[in-house]
Each structure stands twice: as C-alpha cells, then as structure tokens.
Image 1 (cartoon, helix red, strand yellow):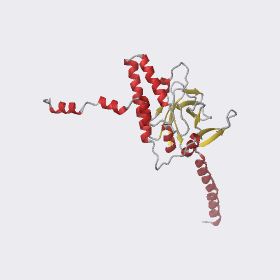
Image 2: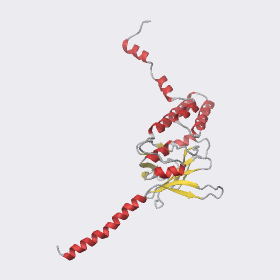
Image 3: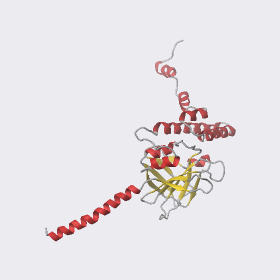
Image 4: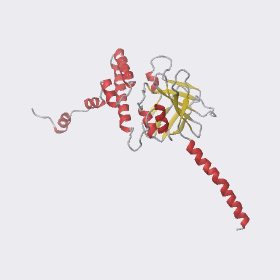
Length: 273
C-alpha cells in the first residue's frame, strides 16, 4: 500500500475518534439534574429534579407550596403533536406496576380538574399529596433505584405513542430535590414498601367502591375521605398506613378464603360431632 494512502487512512481515523468521544460525552450528559429556582417570597430556593432526553422529551419533579409533589411530562418542542385530556398518559418504572393517570379523574370531586392539568405538549399530575421532608414517596423510590421510565401517551389525533426517560443519576438528583440521602442500590429496596402501599391502597379503594354501589353515598364519601387523609399523612409507612385506615388487606383475603375445615369436609365427606 502506498505510503500516501496509509497516511490518508490514518488521518481519517484520527478525525473520527474525537467525534466518537464527543458522542460518548453527550450520552453521559443525558442525565437528571437539579434546577435551583429563586423564590422572592422565601429565603429558601425551590428545587426541581429534571431531565431532557436525546429525543427531546422532558420529565420534571416539583414540590408545591402545600408540600404535594407533582410530575410533568412534556413532548419535544419540535413535535407537532398535542396531548389529549381525554386519555391521560400511563407511565411505569422498569418492570414495576404502571401508573395510569386516568385514575386521577375518579378522585376528582368537582367539575374542574385539580389533580392534573393538560396544556398542549405538557401534562402535570400529582404524585403524592403531602410529602414532608425526609419522606420518599414509593414511586420516587422506584425512580431513584430504577433505570428507565416508560411512558405511553395519547395525542389529540388519537395516536398512541411511547417514550423512554432514562433514570441516569436520578438517585442523586431526586435525593437532592427531596433533601434526603441517595438510596443505596445494594441495600435499599423498593419492592416491599411499594407493593405494600399499592396493595393496601388498591384493596381499600375497592372496598370504598363496593360501598358506593351496595351501601349509602355517605358511607362511600366517608371511606374516600379516610383514604385521602391517611394517604397524605407525613412520614407514612405501610404499617402506619394500615393503622390509619383501620384496614388490613390480609384480613380481607382471609375472610374471602374458605376455612380449612370446610375444605376438608368437602373433599373428605361429612364429619361427625
């Protein structure tokens, strides 16, 4: 091979290497970060955890003045699509249970939505009602220890689309946003606490719904009010959540199962006293 040709090949290789390195550096910059916002009415700045993906999708966590934590999902600014309020997005962290924002509509008590807001390419939604400092809501624990948020969203034209939000450095950013220590992936787990909260909440709301159709409207309202009060209590654990509700899903499941003695009598004939 002529020397001049070898020289040209080497020049091409050296020209490409910096571009490859720049691509790696850009990929590393796609990560969660904390935005510090000055509040003229408070000496303490407002913190938000945010990310902008390579495809232009945005996800944002913010704390409201009532200590509720909200999320915001945004389509790319270059997108011509608009989100529809008729079908809210669904999101899940890794392989955990999905969060269907449509369920927020069932919790509304008035004609105007107060738990979510859709405006063009953005949707804002409540994540936790009252998150005092030091408390990590279950879904945020999932994010801090997870890898990807999978979002399914619906447009005004009836299209169903999907987006993926990386959770690169979400542990550190969300911890700073909540003013807590980052979680230890080797020691901390989301499974027990999250599944317990999810199971308790789901079974209790099912119980309330049964009252709505088989009991009185006042019983249903009292049941839902109890749920709201307990779910918004600060520093809530799964055990204290059960105590606040006065409800244990395990006891409900035990009542639904046939007694062991009855099962034996069915399979083995009648018993004599």
